[in-house]
Length: 307
Image (tube, rainbow, N blue to C red; front, side, top):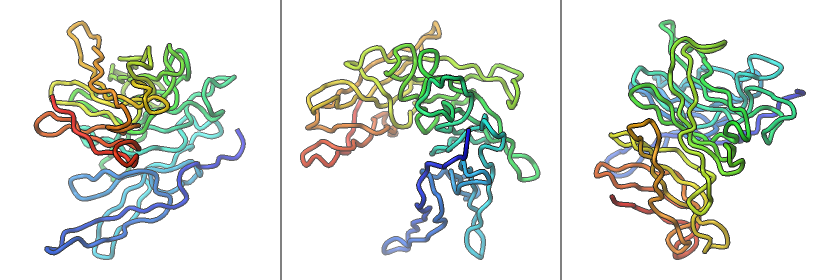
């Protein structure tokens, strides 16, 4: 496979803003090889892809507060299983928690290596992983799914996962699936004893494969899930009034027969935004998000979609 080159940013910071009564105080927590936004546990520890790791393929790190500042601990360094890096290359953020305190994430590369490669990289199609805390303070690393590339599986795995109360893991791939370039929404469900490198076997179900860019394709951004199990996300496609596809917001609703119903909630036109990022759900069920460009000044918008 040759020498690995980590593609993440060479710089970047983790910072804290604390209210002081009249404004906000800024504190720098970490400033080396930060690759995406952090998540925080109940004790105030911060977790994210931090640093380049022992094998220069990325690492998941923890920042812990103390009287002397913030201490860094590498939880897992990727490409520990050389030379193929079946455990992944270049972890992405944000990570996700489950109710038991396990962390979930994905890598952009690494995993299985079919030849010729059906991915954009000869370094594999990426994977989804789980990190389980041990009583001694270390973390056990487990692979939940290796992506297989175009046609039979997703490719170019998007960062960010949703984990429901049953332990099902949801995410998207920008490309792949039976429609090749349109992308997928997938579910990984725990199904009992696992294979090599796994604590629990997980089975992939492609709950939606985008068939037509007029209704959305190439999903991007982190999914959101409401209290009844509906998934919400954003994708390309939709209207072509902005010189290309302007993007859509969609919903996937679980059905009694195990299928999922796709609904396009909004198609952007450019004047109301272009290139939506992911969405978040408000207390009243409204969806909130941003777009990269579009709007009155073509600098992007903040939008709300109400039920």
